[in-house]
Length: 315
Image 1 (cartoon, one colour):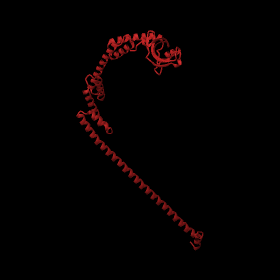
Image 2 (cartoon, rainbow, N blue to C red):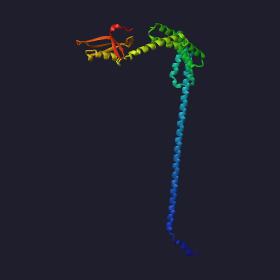
Image 3 (cartoon, one colour):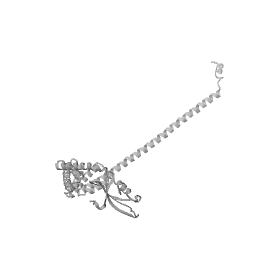
Image 4 (cartoon, rainbow, N blue to C red):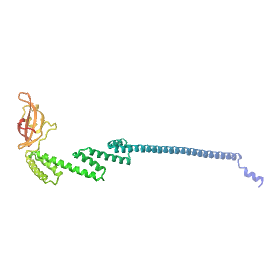
């Protein structure tokens, strides 16, 4: 290649521009290198921070596990002391106190302590039974019911419970039968109700059924007879009067505005109708206030008869 051709090749190029281009490339490479360095540095910082956080979390978890282990060890130690204390109390006949100890340490509850409580409860109930009179069937039945529920597999407790239930029923039967002998024959409802209870206590006793049927028939017939008197009068909400009586008094009073009802008896029945007694105050012809008690016979919501207070006596 000749000198002329060489000049032709390089003559169009600007040497200064080439130098600037090379310089700019160096700057660009330096910038890229700097950016990479910063990225690696940042990644290193993040990695260190993550490692520190993980270490802290690990230490916290270790401390938590340690505390739980220490607490469990303390609870196990305290529970052992409680159980040993309860055993000594039960052995010395102080099961009730043993139960009180367990109650104060419920936070230590586990299967072993529960079993100890069952044992103390059983011993306490047996001790109560020993201190209870053999004639106190209701208390003994209650204790054996608790024992039967506590130890269902113990047939002795179930048998004792059944025996005392039977004794209680027989005692109640005798008591109710004695009671029904004192009731007035004409008190059909009371007799019927007692014989109903006796039937339930002793279904095999034919006398109770026949007596119940007798009094029920009389009571039903009596209630049908009462229907001719209309609805039974009811006391007012304040308990001092009957609407039928107050209406009658106001209609027959010279000063109805002064009428004051003071008290009222229960409602009874007679052959003439429903019987109620009321005390009241009102003004007389002279304008003076007076109080009195009278009996009123009511039929079909109307007062049919008025009688002095001495006519009937409430037993």
